[in-house]
Image (cartoon, rainbow, N blue to C red; front, side):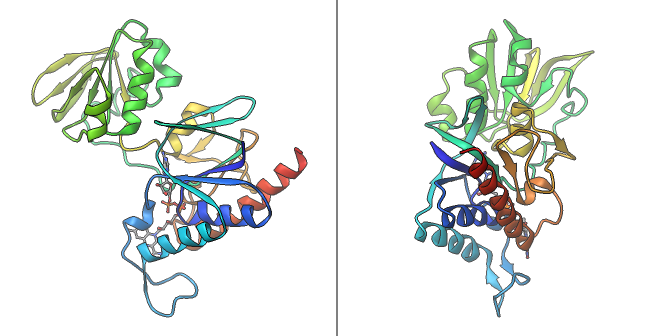
Amino acid sequence: MYDTIVIGKGPSGISCALYLKRAGFNVLVIGKDGGSLAMADYIENYYGFAKPVKADKLFSGGIKQAENLGIEIISDEVTDIEYGGGISVKTLSAAYEAKTLLFATGRKKKSAPIRGLKEFEGKGVGYCAVCDGFFYKNKDVAVIGGGKYALAEAEYLKNIVRSVKIFSDGKAEKILSESFDGDIINEKILSIYGGQTVEGIKTEGGDYALSGVFVALGSAGAADFAAKMGLETLGGNIAVNKDYSTNIPAVFAAGDCIGGMAQIAKAVYDGAAAAKTIISYLKSSK
Ligand SMILES: Cc1cc2nc3c(=O)[nH]c(=O)nc-3n(C[C@H](O)[C@H](O)[C@H](O)COP(=O)(O)OP(=O)(O)OC[C@H]3O[C@@H](n4cnc5c(N)ncnc54)[C@H](O)[C@@H]3O)c2cc1C
């Protein structure tokens, strides 16, 4: 059991982990990739660098700094979180337990520009298999997505619904074909259609009658986890109090996923300030 699991190995997650570890707490960082810094080129406005610094150098420097302190960092994608007596953070291959959790998952993802997707939100289009899967008992549903998150959502739905097809929009990752034993439709999606509610998906290759569509594009982001856990959101970001706590005890959030200025300096500060709150929380619940 870790004192804290941090989801995200960008500036905010690593900053929080550094403060927690230096205060003597047992912290695990799980991160999928380089987050926003992987998309940036040179950084010219962060303190302490006389010349522009390559964003990937800043990112790998943060990782190395944490590892040098003995912080455990796992490169994996979190697909689900269970909140009960403790907190269980799940990837496709493992589950990790902790007393507290920090979301440092970065900016919210863009939704896909699929015709009908917005129109049918709440009318057959959903974003959380755990929350809404039950409503599709014995019905035919789709999961839209091409990676591990889509796979995890489809696997969850399989036990409830009559059939589940994964629509990858032509972008299926190898893991899907290797691990999913249902239908994977690798065709470009033209639209989600229906009347009062969803009735199907049209692709370049066919027309598939369906009662529900679960969107699981890319990896699960702040909004997806929020929906699963009942975390309050504000404009798609995780809503936090001044001390970075959320509406759920033991769950905190920092960095780009809580909104505000999307800058490294702010993400680093958030991580450090969230660590202060987490430390108080852990000490008071001993
Ligand atoms: C193109 C571009 C240029 C930029 N230029 C600048 C600049 O010049 N100066 C500046 O100050 N800021 C700049 N920024 C913004 C800056 O990069 C961000 O504000 C900062 O990286 C936010 O840090 P963060 O830790 O909150 O999130 P991120 O750095 O985005 O890290 C998020 C982490 O969460 C992980 N994650 C998300 N979902 C999951 C999941 N399901 N499972 C596991 N891990 C997950 C990601 O893999 C990643 O490790 C730029 C951003 C972009 C996109």
